[in-house]
Image (cartoon, rainbow, N blue to C red; front, top):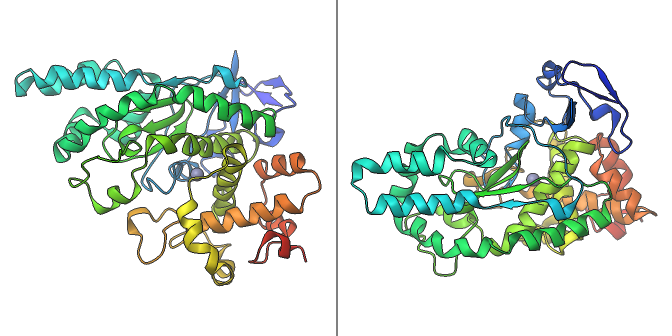
Length: 381
Ligand SMILES: [Zn+2]
């Protein structure tokens, strides 16, 4: 059953899970954080993914290891799209950024702020509007980031052209996603220039990508950047994998849950996004973590299982710049291995995939996976 914004039922929709549909008015429920997902308003089904602090906290972890301080908020709703060929990659904001850049370069210093404000901020796409609100703040913050790393920002221009074929790459990936998960939702993706604060996030306008956090080239001058930035800034080539990871979170928001508070639930959600990205694209964003963790799996599992029902995720998830002698996000690895065990143990892979996305009970899911800290094959022995 879906409801409109007044709470009146709109009827059932088989593709959607009853318990995830929420009347637009029930934001108090989001505040509990019990519900992730969608609600319906007249004329279309809309995302409603970030109303509550708890849920917001989760969403902020998307594009996860890259930006532990991300946050999402509400933006103009957009209709769900089920056609991978209609999922757009919006790069207009990037081009307007460079237009402002060029105009400011030949203008008096005192005009610079107004130029960026007018050309980049005031004409923002819906995705950039959200990103400004969530992760940039105002034009002064953007200009401060540029002034702290002018050579790096300047180098991003060369990378800008490489996003031209991103839409075709993504549509190809999305078709594969649709093949393994019929009913998948495909929002638009906005590539925007940010203030080095966020790799991206998701919200109702779609998937939002901070270009400057994902456009490192082989010759990029990174000496102006912090150690953490130098470690986490990705490449344009890696964007499809990252975006598909986020796309899985969209499916989880629509069909399952994203608002788990416990370490186990959050780790499974992240591991599922990596696992399904790998099914669709042959790779996932956490390969570095896996390389470190694989040989330590049984010890990590023994450690993880002691704390997995706690809400404290430090040391396992979203450590980002606090990383010490081990990767900050080993929970992604554990979650992946649980999901992998679940998938491999299942007799019907398609059904298993749907169950992974629809997962609402982490403890039960773990139990059914048979995962005990070893390989998926041995887990069921
Ligand atoms: Zn994620």
